[in-house]
Length: 77
Image (cartoon, rainbow, N blue to C red; front, side, top):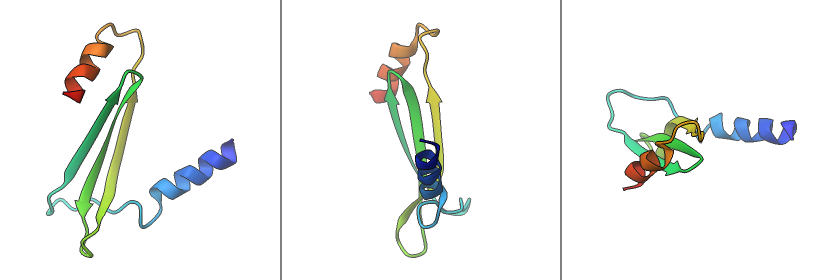
């Protein structure tokens, strides 16, 4: 399991998957929400015209927060 996870992490951060964020260029933000968590990816168009991920973010939602379903419904609308 650790070997598989390490391999997945290597793929997610290796070129050409991720690129450096360029504050001079526009970016595209994709978000998603499930009852179990939230996530986001920021993309930017590279000089070769390809969209590349420049950042990932995620957050696990727990049942401790009674507003979890409302938050997910708002983010999915």
